[in-house]
Length: 93
Image (cartoon, rainbow, N blue to C red; front, side, top):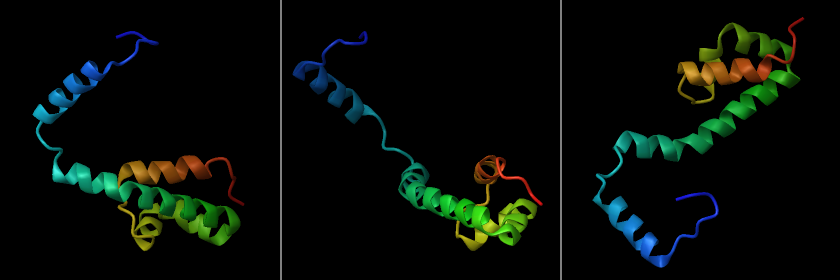
């Protein structure tokens, strides 16, 4: 297909058939997809609080794992990097 091509009902049926032939998504993927919006909101709250409170910001920069754990967010590398990137624009005193 090319951009601008239309999907006909027949194409939708064929696509549905192909999708139904796939195995179900792994449970870990489903669980992560459900938890993602909450984690994103909590990351945003950490950053917002860190931008408003210099002492908290220093704690987050020094020990992002603890800040994530306090917010009940998995402290994996990607979440730590998200916090660092978002806070990078605001300099420490």
